Image 1: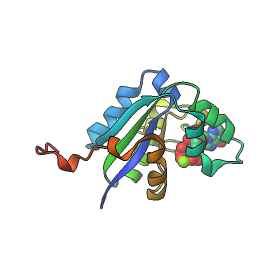
Image 2: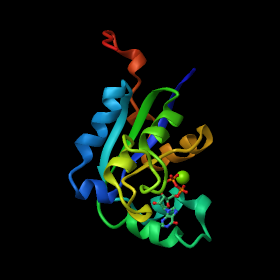
Image 3: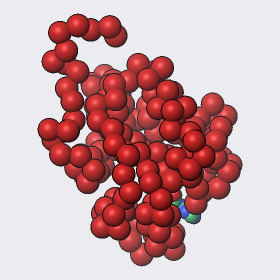
Length: 149
Ligand code: IDP
Ligand code: MG
């Protein structure tokens, strides 16, 4: 198993509902590193770039509108098998199909307000992270002198 970095977004509905801390907490409890984090109001170009694989689908434009409608938190989560683990912890795309215990399963109801985003593959993570972070904004825990985990 290899260490990976993945993009987690805490979507507008979650920020609005005061769930930032509880969502971050799940990944901290799991032992993942928060390698970068910022509260931003996503620009339209960023949302279009993020969802470019979905251009032409019926939900593309509403999703771009939703993601730019109010602030979000962008996070780089790092750790072993982080890409798949974060997707699992986020839960199925449709919150009504997401398992209880997952973020979408516990906090969401509708697919168009589904709480979080997680990169779906290594290729996606490598494409998505730079939409939000410069290389130097992503911290390397391997450099820490003291290790607690
Ligand atoms: P994912 O976020 O679980 O990777 P994707 O299929 O990549 O799911 O879809 C991207 C986002 O587009 C979803 O998280 C959701 O916000 C939105 N979306 C996907 N399918 C629908 C739909 O059928 N109706 C409305 N919004 C959708
Ligand atoms: Mg996706």
